[in-house]
Length: 196
Image 1 (cartoon, one colour):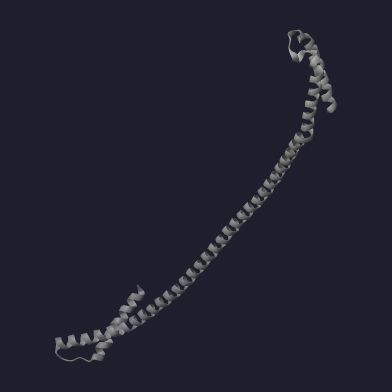
Image 2: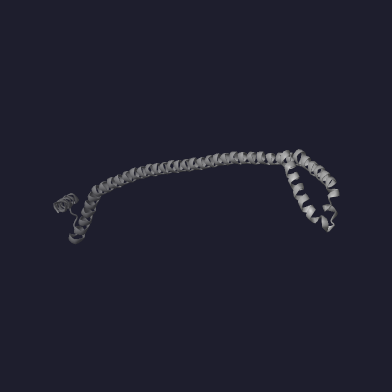
């Protein structure tokens, strides 16, 4: 690279000499051939020092900064990728927790529902048994009442008939014969109901 710069400097100097010879008659001191050697000397020293400063100090710092930035960018990208993977894992865990919670809640709801339905069915069965028992008890009481009421009605009818006859005739009639007539009449009525 140094060779290229030196060749470039010589080409530039050569071009300058050609233009200087042409401009020498103009009276510019930079173009006077007397000062060319000193100008070329200081030009080489100035650009040489500038070249050394650039190659040894400034450009290494710039390349180090570029390498540092590049490595930092790569580290940041790796860190971002890791954080993205971790956040994706967290999101997947969160979604799994939500799904598990929904399933558990659904299971709890179904269990509670089944338990409530089971309790309702038990209470319904218990209530139906109690109602069946009450109905059969009431039916038994009604049948007993019917059986007893027929006897009571017959007895009341016999007593009422005896009193009516006593008031109509004025004499007391045998209550057993009236009771027998009332019972016969009740049996006939019962037979008629059974036939119908």
